[in-house]
Length: 596
Image 1 (cartoon, one colour):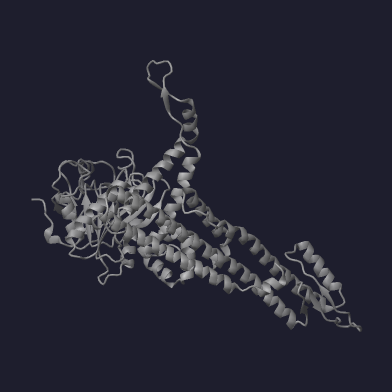
Image 2: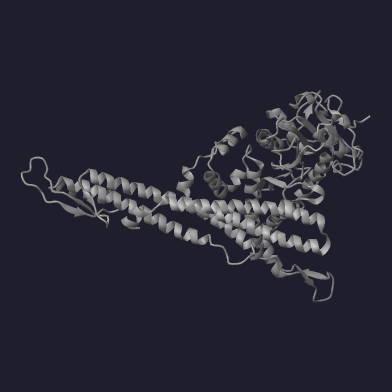
């Protein structure tokens, strides 16, 4: 970039264009939400059969277009702001060098060279002629030494000053040229395909675009106010509210996963961030799965003898190379499909919009999904699933909280309800190998406490909301650990099928007296495993048996369940168990049916 072009560059024009793209992204996001939460919901309740299926397919494609436009326009906005930032830095350096040169009696020429007047060093009798110098960018220890030597021997003292100005100008022009060269391909890469189909490849490309803009715009990103390091939900919320719309947009575009994970931020903000992460992650997973598809595993035995089929050689080789990776990808994909299935069911019999408050495919995967907005809910329940819980199998946990939402909403007297599936920890995956150990609960409990704190910070109701922590199986152990390790920040606690909760009595659960509730079905074997010494996660007395929430010594309210089928029926519709949980969630304690 030459001097004339850099002097004429107006960062404000690019910033205005960036603001235009940000406005477009916001409009696309609003359109997507309207389609998903209002129009699709209306169609779902008014049509059925093939008519509904066809309409929903078309609406989903349109929603995908808006979501993709939202994501890419936000990236373009941030890229333009980053480009303007980089060029503006170089322009300020150029302007400062030109101003200093003028003050030093030198003249900057249009080609970047600097002319200096005649002058003489102290003690010299004759004026040395003036001249013109051209600077060089960068420099090295060798070239700098040579320049110093030339300045020292030059008879005109103005030569050295002029050379310094010229070098500063050359550095500024080089910096601007590098920024221009860096950003041109990044901006071209943000051009979408000329079609109306948002493919998995498009979403995978969006992830690549995000990485590219983040890397190229690192100086701009570094200039933004950073989130508090290990900040509390209250600190996180204050930081977010203090950002300008431009700064919020940049963080959402480039730091999507970290914004989606920040407790204390508005649910709508976290949902927007996590849905972008989910869409891009699914795109990558689908593309990778399609790159090396699984061959046919079995073929008929050509000899017609037993076994009737034989394993193909091509499959064996594929499995050795790709099998483990494909299995992991398919588990992640199953979880993402379950989350999207819940998105698509918004409006069914009044089911509210879903909010994705956390999402990660690492290890066994994590997901935090709310039915209804907890920020505006008068009553919020947070459910922690237990052993074997993972992203791949999250559908059942989502359905449990959907059923609890329906039951609670019917009792809430018109007040807003939100029920949340919180798979925000690495749950033990084996009843035998993992569940006997407490470290899964101890490691996950701080995150649960912070999440509960964040719900209180973000809630906008006058009362601050009524919050209930619900644990199933090993999830009860985590909630107990959360109470033991810190402030649980819940109004009620409900345990179901608990093997033990790390504290010896209800009074240690960090909720008001009388607000610890327990359910234990007669056919549930898990509490007995805890009672008779299965693992080290329970509070023991007398050196022998453990106290669990269903024991009289613990002091919890023992709720009737109406089930006797075992460990997994506590959320079955039309059961005392589900109705009792809903009564606690909505603060209708008089409707709780206790065990006789």
